[in-house]
Length: 312
Image (cartoon, rainbow, N blue to C red; front, side, top):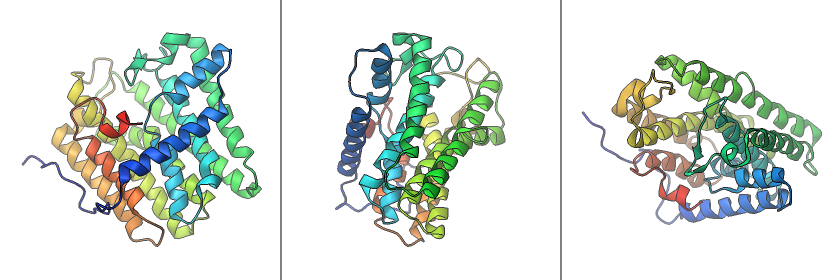
């Protein structure tokens, strides 16, 4: 029986709560902070960095970092540098993923890929600079206890290494000419997407002084949401592309499990993500629940990008 498009059953977003307004405000906050980090300059490197970093986007990972911090009692000013570092790293992964040696993508969100505009060498340097600058942000946070800074840096390194983004990308590259097994595909999603979501949430929670129970619930929320986000992306892509596995393109969740299977899993993951934090004492759950609901809703839109992303 086909799945009827519906909201996750664990709805926590009330009509009085303006989710889109809150997300726009968070987006603008992060974008302004990023602009201050890389003001306009005369070098091609700065221009390339700004092109990659300041292009329109959801800013979802830094927003998750901020919301997790606030949910456990922290404040925005304290977590904003870490949130910006998360976004720099995310943009670095996109720049490097698009390179000819990786996904060989000519466009990114409807714009020419960075290497197509500035050349491969400058794109690599721009990505490398974003990575280094992100860790500088984390290491030089004012008034932060050294133990916490080291823990945050270690958390992010784990998310980026062989058990995280790099390992997931390697699996993705090796499997591009094969039909992935469901187990391998889930492994790719957990590493390539879920790990950075989990790190963003965990870092925000750590900055905010989360209790062990809050940290456990939030990191679970982050991993579940990251997997849901990737499935949502795959559902989106399946509506606008005819690629089939085995022709040089990586298989996605829809190609392995079918449209209905992907929707079922997406709904399951979103509900589990909301449930993981609903049972734990914290602040206002509506922003985090709203983000999870948004991840589900974006899969139901027919265009290449949903309204929230267009407003970024």
